[in-house]
Image (cartoon, rainbow, N blue to C red; front, side, top):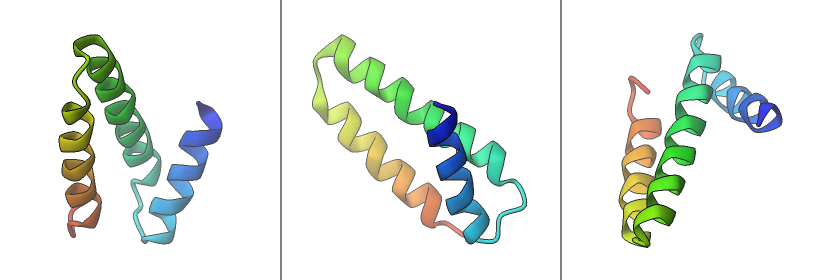
Length: 63
């Protein structure tokens, strides 16, 4: 998990975010959480909807 967080953090740093570490943890947490819910409820649409929401979040100026 640390390797993933480190990689995500570097991506946010490249976007000029001072809070890159916190954003990296939030992003990985969201994906891990939706993975659990998708598996638990056998509903792949949950992952698709959350993926789109996270894309909008990352692309927003206040990511």
